[in-house]
Image (cartoon, rainbow, N blue to C red; front, top):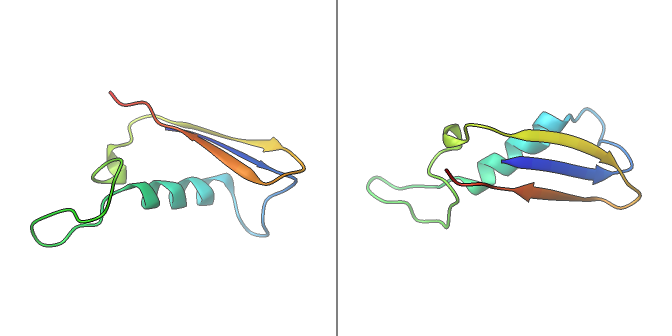
Length: 70
């Protein structure tokens, strides 16, 4: 999973890792006792085995996420 953050600067007291963690948590599954009930990319974010993240100075704020499945 690769992540590129575009922005003029980081929010105060935030790092690239904070953004990456939030994205990874959003893409994993929420589950009940016996089933997963939300759309997911992976069951648990510990399944992400490789990734890169970087900050790109930009006047607009947006991010890009690229996921490659093994």
